[in-house]
Length: 598
Image 1 (cartoon, rainbow, N blue to C red):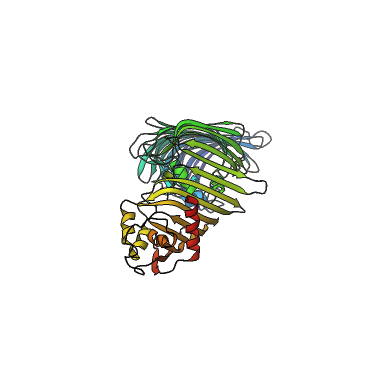
Image 2 (image 1 turned 120 degrees about the horizontal axis):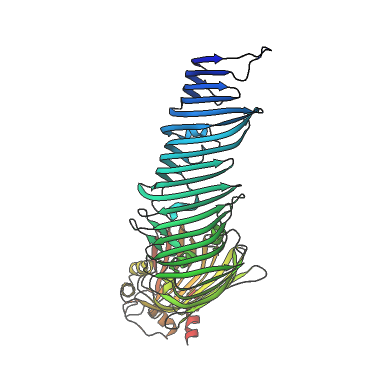
């Protein structure tokens, strides 16, 4: 105690043995006392009235201050029963601002919890037992809190992927909070506003803790903030009304069960039941996912996933899978995607969907098949479907006993898949055939496309223009150039692709090319481009398309061009040189293709 005043009015009665009787009374008051605690925090301006009678001590009309927080108490009662002090009473505070530094002095781990800038007032009734060795037990608290504002920094769950406005923190404002603590168990009820990047929505929250388990129920009215679910191509715009109801169970081992998840916006519904997550928030299993919504491509999605032990059934009327296809085309390893989402996926999945969109307009019918996962790796897959004109599409993946994974993909309509690559524009028709063998994260692949037309390919157009082959350049940027066959042989290791050979042949031009690609870093390609008229000089089987390419006289013009393309993807440099002599490899590959067609 640093300063202050203590006043006492003492009434004592002595028995015949000279000892004080238990009917003694001591009354008084304490004024303007400052007290320093063990953690070096100071309680200032302590004022209260007190009364001591027998084994009971009463403290009333108390006023004191901690870190500029004004606290009051009408009554605190302390009773001594067999060296156990029974303490009960109330403490209230007027509207107060508490920063993170102050909280960290009283609560462990609060400094790095993300909690900051707390502004509130409260009324609190409490009771607890205190032993003569200062051990607490049977703690009970009943609080009513007017939470004016609380800021919280939270960067788990990748919230910004679903709420674009989210910048790593949110605020709770004007919340009415009820807090009931019974020893180690507690209940919290709260309702008020949640603010994300200045946009305000309503939230009701109920948290119950019992025997180390936590049950969390919330209802959030998300009316002003947008919501984005990229994998489903779903987007809720700002100012559209929606409701999110979640019931979550957190177990002692920190695993999480999302017992119910219901999102509603107009006629759109997303329902999830019994989603089990490990302590790192990766999926262990899920019982039900029911999707019924219209996405931003104006495609209605109706899909149901059901679990039966380790087996899943995915069925439905319509589904927009365009974004998922783009993700698979962009990734180097499907196991990386699965590992980011699932804890240890080992399951058999059956698929039966009537209508599946592979881009915003193209779709396939009757998608049927089976997928098998072991230790987060897709080891077996067989999917079949057909386009509206009955053109076929199928995909298979087989894994051998030595770990080699063989993938085959065939589509009698190549356009929806080729146009996923942004640098190819104006691709039409085509039949696609793909084969890949992968082992120890190294794959050897071959891609073939037959009977297609290109209207735009910026790099190729630039090469043709620099080589003064303007006739073909005009075709490419106008009606398009037809190709009979495109073949690409390449290998992948990590984010590096080595292109052993790209060969394309058509009535107008043929191309032979090789090089390498480092994803998002470097592209290096070199090759030869030859007009069909030059090939005609050697083969004599392709009609002459005109004098524009090689001239009217012998020796006029060039046989073709060699080119080099190198640089970062957004800053490619192109070098073009005329050539008089074709490489033997080019001639051999051309003869092979022509013999096959004949």
